[in-house]
Amino acid sequence: MNDEKKILVTGATGYVGGRLIPRLVKLGYLVRAISRSRAKLESRSWSRHESVEILQGDILDVDFLNHAVKGCRAGYYLVHSMGAAGKNFEDLDRLAARNMRFAAAGSDLEKIIYLGGLGDTRLGPLSRHLRSRHKTAEILKAGPVPVTYLRAAQILGSGSASFEMLRYITDRLPIMLTPKWVETPSQPIAIRNVLHYLIGCLENDQVTGETFDIGGPDVLSYKELMNIYAEEAGLHKRIVIHIPMAAPLISAYWIHLISPLPASLTSPLIEGLKNPVICKENRITKIIPQPLLSCRTAIQLALERVQQELVETRWSDAGMVMPPEWSYSGDAEYAGGTVLECCYKTILLASPEEVWQPVTRIGGKTGYYFGNLLWQIRGLWDQLSGGIGLRRGRRHPSELYVGDALDFWRVLEVIPNHRLLLHAEMKLPGDALLEFRIKSITTEQTELQIISKFLPAGLWGIIYWYSLYPFHHWLFGGMLKSMANSINRKIIQEPTPFKCELEPENPETDSDND
Image (cartoon, rainbow, N blue to C red; front, side):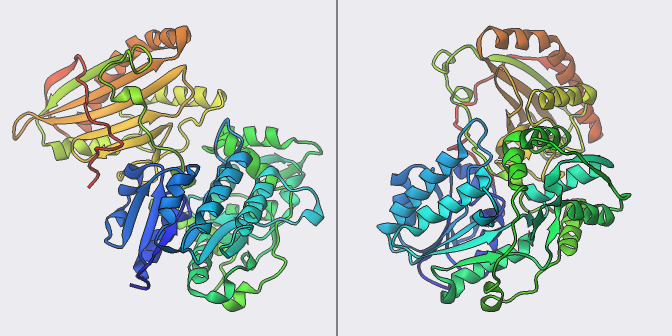
């Protein structure tokens, strides 16, 4: 081991944190990973390594953070609240940073390593996102523990929010009406270069307490980035037409309509593109040397990972994974209202392992086995309503982790060959779950169940449920038959409705994801 004391990683299931931890473990470090969802962390393959300790808690809870930093030598601060829809992410960022500063002050931490953003106030007012990144650094640096502050522009890598926005804009718009921000210069950096710097800051005392600008070798406009992407993706050159006025909010909602990124995320990203983000110094390149990837190479590598379906982490990994209380409450009255259900089952001449195959592949490119046009209409409706729609897809065609985004669902529980639980993140007049259960009947017969549960919000929620209820019966019956056909297994009992049985356990605290 590199050290007897642990390395704390906040934002452990986020885009950067989820890639950093396995690399730290490979180098021999002891890692304490913290997240609001233990099940989400435990679903990662690296979580079972003997060098990884998992703590569940919220960084907004200062008492939890005081406990989390104990016994740690250094801490990575990789937290931001930018995607918190309906919330003031600047206030949340400040509160989280203050908690980290206070907790660090009473601990044995020798250094904090913070990944923030570039931006120069001398060139004009900063966007809310960049301003919040800078304010977070100020708050952390005001404490007694030295802070190494890495300032980056866009991070290019498979699954990053910046790369996904670039990919969807360029893929889907051969002709673009663009505002002025497409000509703003920036200095993107590849995710592998970011990870190398983060690890280097842990191992090199020269950087302790210092601030560094980190970037790749290219300074490009967003228009130039789009042209490079189009060339690497084998697309015709995009036609870019400038328009004199375009509010960032309008641009954000337009990108939301053509991409899976929510407006709550694209809005601060677009607003930030008005600010030049260029490195003003490059001292770190001499202290922590490494080959810096060009934007073209970074885009090439990201496209390869996407095409090979080997995306390690995605922007959508970040987010809360907490089953709603009503989903496991034994009494619906205490859950806040009547839970409405539609349950269908069938029996197949197959093993649980065989039946699990179509369950774990659902969504994304596979679709939903039956009535896919209806699912697509529902996804479009959701996007037009300001929701995320179906375009998030899946991280992997057959592998599911707790916390994964799956179209407009979030994976809450994965018990191989037994149970998959999904929580709806689409716009709804209520709260919804979709569950697949597999039960072994005999050594050769397996029951497959589809269970839909809905907690309506007021009268409109009840109207919504019952207006779709007839379609549920048709849809679920068809899905069960098509799932059986996908594995070429005989149906012994035709799909039939049944009364759902309560799953007594709380999937957040009593799940088995091995």
